[in-house]
Image (cartoon, rainbow, N blue to C red; front, side, top):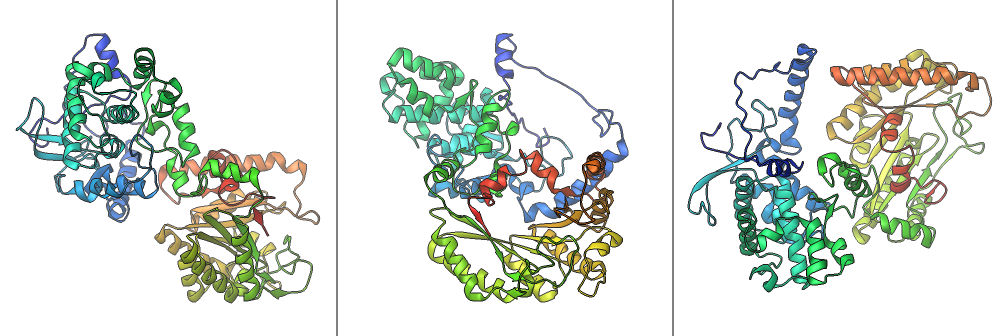
Length: 592
């Protein structure tokens, strides 16, 4: 009642409506006054307050730069999901549409009431639950009345809008109001109508069956009338209101429909209609929809942006990846050893202190260009390609790096391919010029540091035997600050040996330096006095446990939090799955 008018909202995804109906309950009213921040009896009130203040500050500072949810709510997703070809259109047949701009957040922003406390919980910093005030209804029992409409939010816009081929924002606002008023879930309602529209266009049902409703994609008048009929339990709406799962059975039994076709176009699982994300681009989303306890519910299967940010696989869809794996060999990633030379002499170096057991030399620009041509020639129709600059120390051949990047960018413009660049550097040659260049061109930067000064300088030494810590830490700090500011990927990577089996302390040291993305890996030297022994196994396990506990403590406190690479990849189903599909493909699609 913050707006001084009735404002209703439905929560129909969990089956509560069916429970109420079966128990003949029309409404459950809860009145409670005196809500306070500690009403639920938090174990540590101060920690809750501190976390709330920190999150409020981050939301205030970053939201306008990222999602603008404080101004447009979840409607900001429409243009993002459309750009990623994941916006359900015409019953999930397509993932984008030229008219999606008519449903963008900028359109709905003009309707949302701004500059007032809002949200589904009073005092929320985000307040993303927007509302439209004084909206005059054009249909139904409240025709001509001006009402307050909660939302619409992304799922409602996509479900009632694009998924039904309807790109009229005022229709969506009105349909949103009536679904809330009638107690109809907007996601299930939108997906249901989209299914019926495809059935109509495939002649599985017709006007005789629908009672005269011409349920073609884009027919907003028919869609609105169907919503009213479902609420009244009249006409075709009485049948439609049973949901897709039961409609499939009815259409097969009553109208002789092909069950295979219905199962193909009827977007439901476990009796629940799909939420509004096309899953063709995301194996994670497909699995999540199928495994979620109550059916394809997005908030139990929210893995979609792992795909969008190349954490699962690239924009080539999974089926085409599989086809290509078995069709022929192809290459989608190159590791270019642009420098068989190094300005450090690290004692565990697998590349024989940088020369790879040969002559110290740098890759020429011509060879670099030829490498890009090789990648293009053998990449088939793979759109996203990866080039990693490695060494030795690749910045010793920075001119070749620049040539390769420039050459690849020109190819992008001509072919539509997309190159992603990574560089691994010991940070010795990071200066203002190289930092600025890498900031603009590299999708990921890996910088080497073994942790504490005494640990690093024991192993990572210069040609004269002196340590590298004092020179590289300021360089890494400057680079990390810019990567954090730009929201770009980086890792500060270390190696542990039998000389620092307490490597958890090195992880914490790097976190204390302000480095959030950290990777520390075991030495791979096959001989020498740095090798790890079988007897070290339990000590190493203990260190990982120690890192995990400190990781959680810092995350909860907000003080110098960090992400540990190997914990992340294990959360995402193993250390190689997403890299094999995105870039690595060790032994097959990744060449060095």
